[in-house]
Every structure is written in structure tokens, then in C-alpha cells.
Length: 52
Image (cartoon, helix red, strand yellow):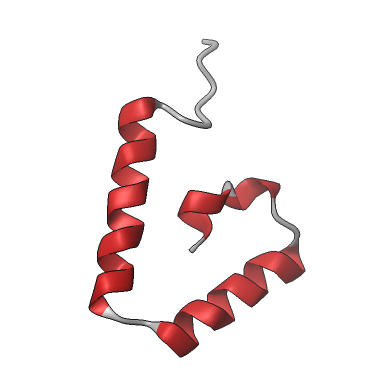
């Protein structure tokens, strides 16, 4: 679940909580949602460092 929530900005405890929630609630629709959100963020270059 961290993909849509800027995982690097989350604390260790928040990451763990999201991971536990995902394990308890895993389903095909959730995986597809995560993939869609990830692809959209990549296409929008959201959260990427544009400086080289």
C-alpha cells in the first residue's frame, strides 16, 4: 500500500501498519488498484526528482 502513499515519507511504524493491513486484506482487486496507482504515478512522474 505504500506505493500510493509516498512510502519514503512514512515512519517505520506506519509502513509496518500498512503492510499488516495489506496482508490481512489482500485481494485481486486490491493488487490491481495498487498497480494502477503505481502506473499512474510513474506516468505523471509524481514524487520523482526531476533534477539531474
